[in-house]
Length: 87
Image 1: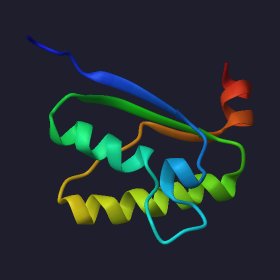
Image 2 (image 1 turned 30 degrees about the vertical axis):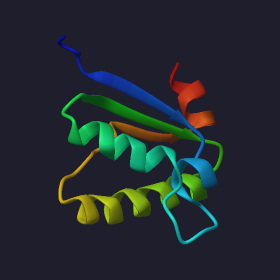
Image 3 (image 1 turned 180 degrees about the vertical axis):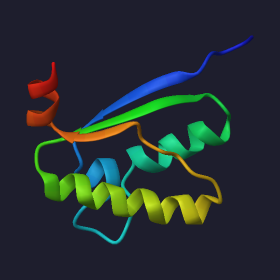
């Protein structure tokens, strides 16, 4: 069975997504890395409510890129307001 790449939109930048407020990495972000390891990852888009959350997830992505030994590069990381403004 041939599975094509999957594009992912992550809405939110909190504890479950990236471990914000903890020393961990959450649940969603590490799962995206596992999916990428399987070679099925398409584009990743991240939307959050506040710029602080976007900045936090950027830091977590940089760290996980080093830990996993490969990079994921989200296409866009914007606040919800920025997404609405460009729609």
